[in-house]
Amino acid sequence: MRSKFSRLCFTLAATVGFTAGLLVAPMPVFAEQRGPDSYLDTRADAAPTPQLQWTGCQDSFLCGTAKVPLDYDHPRGTKIDLSLIKLPASDPKRRIGTLFMSFGGPGLFGTDIFKGGAKLPGFLSDELRSRFDLVSWDQRGVSRKTPVR
Image (cartoon, rainbow, N blue to C red; front, side, top):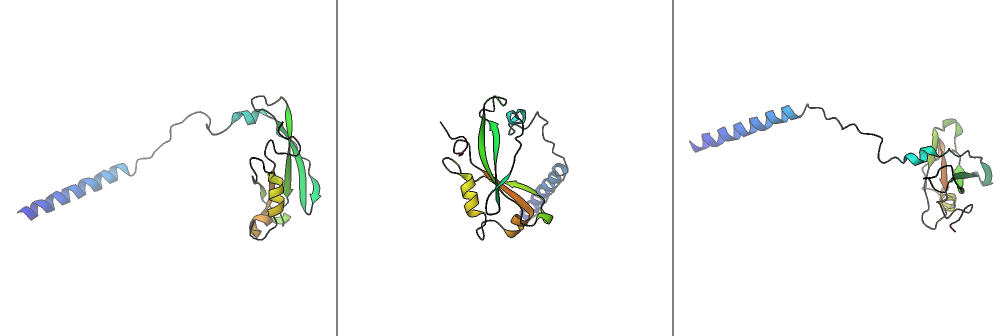
């Protein structure tokens, strides 16, 4: 008798669990609609996009300068210059865009790190090199253009 009761309890529990799973599974889940993405910094949108003029600087690299706000709370105020470096796609016919790569950091020149490593075997894949223009820059404050004062 006990084994019939155990089987009945097991069958009942399995049926309830399975049915509950069916009831919950097809329910669509909707994210709560909120305002703008909190990860986006809307102050950057208020600043004009810098116009870049590229010039040859070494090997097949191009160099440029971006004028950006010193303080994004005052996007039309004082500007500083950031050094940029670009390595054009190795196969311009297959080029699909530009990748911005952040090398460097506190006290380091991102342009130097990029220039030193970009053509080393294994640093960037051949596919990446052929399809994208690659751009890096000096972080704020370490730029040769506008250093920290």
